[in-house]
Image (cartoon, rainbow, N blue to C red; front, side, top):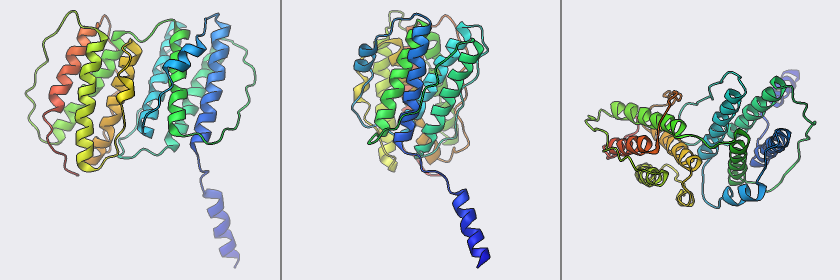
Length: 301
């Protein structure tokens, strides 16, 4: 009998806490409080209503998209660190899965919160003891919207949106993923870059990006991978909007990688580039589309 009691005790002790979207949302709101404090500390005008209006979406997303948005925030934290002469810390990647566990998003809130707190300590900023609040009836879209608002607040704090060089770096990550997929599927790749159009704008990159997402979605449907609704992201064309779409493409590639057996293939980290312009992004994105169009079917491996 005592052994049964011991086993039950151990099972209770080892059982993990169930993390809900309410928990992730609560942590994101704690991050927002830190952001509002930092904006005030540095005397930066905060367009709260404008950010809410532009960064509140009503659509269908998956946990993989919310995770990718948190990656975007970590990139912007790196910009903040660089602007204040602190060393960059590479954002973490993760192995591809067909269906991302929502609990992983909670882990990202902790990484973001920790990095913000480290920055505050390094800059000798005395911060109030913000208390964690409780929320109910929240879903993953609420968490995404909160992350999107945090990302926009970082643009204010850093005093600029992500430059074309940052977007180009993420577009290269798409190129790397597609190159790995084609090699894994034994598809001969003889594609070449598209013609470089000097007068290209961010809008043109979004048009090509949407074609990539449509093709990815077609492949996902063919093998039963749950899809998203990305139509709500066509409306804007700032540099941050292009970066978000680029991240969405990376997120949508991951379940495909997992399906074909590339479960250990973490998307390579972004490299540093300089002096890139929208024409560079549109040309590389067009090349990515050409590579993707080589894939006709997917086989589970």
